[in-house]
Length: 122
Image 1 (cartoon, one colour):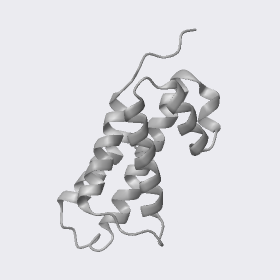
Image 2 (tube, one colour):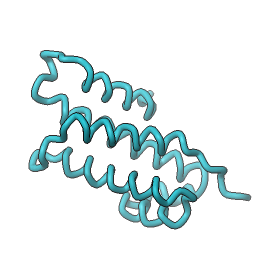
Image 3 (cartoon, one colour):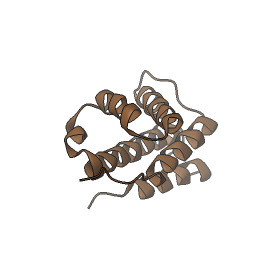
Image 4 (cartoon, helix red, strand yellow):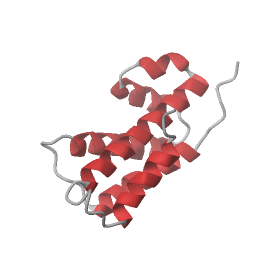
């Protein structure tokens, strides 16, 4: 069974809060990947509850549609920005994110996961 978005974010927060020799020097990249996985899982759940066909679209397309269909445009902009930043930071060429950035991205993903507007009418 796959971890839930909440479990992924909890693990990301743990990496921010604990000094573990096993993750020293890598905790930022690991937390980045966990946070992005949680965001993408929340996005799949959002589409699965409303417009299941969009869950198979690439993420850029999903964010374009989300900007049109989600009632909280400001949250959508923050989520899209977080996804772009997490994507860039997750690559070896990307700059390692700082703790403040990761905390902000985690909070944004948590807010998006908690914002569950009503499913589309049938």
